[in-house]
Image 1 (cartoon, helix red, strand yellow):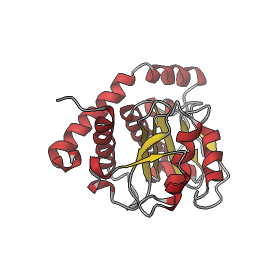
Image 2: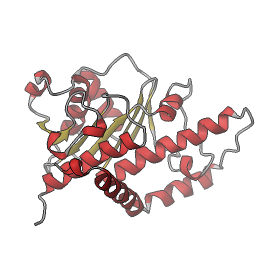
Image 3: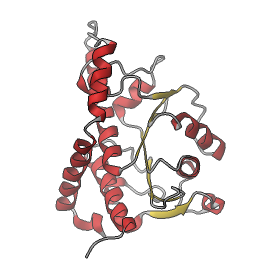
Image 4: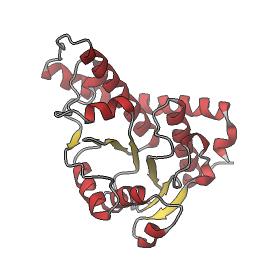
Length: 243
């Protein structure tokens, strides 16, 4: 029996939480992912407040409406998650998936005075001139005004390096979003490791970095298959993700 779009999205998003926990990229019971299920993008799935990523099942995901302000007072909805994801899904209908994390290496780069992902290899070159940077961190993003501001920074870019905070990526599919945030963290790990040697970095030329970034953009099927392989692994490890 074929699954409905919402049912399949629930499984895929739940699997993404499990994958991120498996890879150690989560932050205790914090951080949040969402995926739109309506054509206008306003109805979306979100993880429940403070539930560990490794335990999230398809049925645990909350179905919210970005136009319904009462969600802000729902005890199952994290205030920061609602402020950020509610505003993005309300204002950017083309955004289908939003992943927000505080992974170690990406957050380390975000904490630099100049939070730049230098193109020093094939992975880091994927992000050449393709990441917005927010340098106005003012505390936890727990207001709709802050969510609206972050939405504006994502209007012309699918990725946002959140200075002194973490990272957010958006994408048309869950597979593309997962592979993007995974490669972003791996890129920052490579960059931090190279910087830690104390030796000069060999930065790629703008021409080579741009060509490499464009080549990445041609293989979204690679990103989706990366996710499918990881999803299969999660289901094999613990089928409860499907519940």
